[in-house]
Length: 82
Picture 1 (spheres, rainbow, N blue to C red):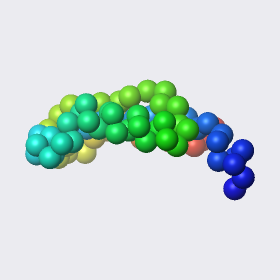
Picture 2: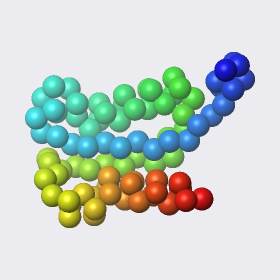
Picture 3: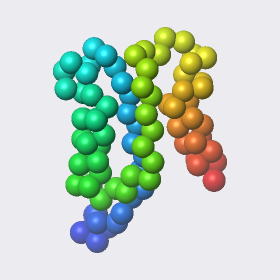
């Protein structure tokens, strides 16, 4: 891959999920967002949208289908069909 190809901007989204147990280990939603944005900047990725699921756990497929991650999965499936 040439330097020119490597510098081509990419488009991405950020997905942040709150988890009470993980927050104590430094993974608060704010820290997750900061880390994602730092990674994106280093890798020439433009974050077009930040999605957040601020619930403590997803234990049920019904919740997944209506949650933010469910919407992201549907968006990705629709983009793949294009």
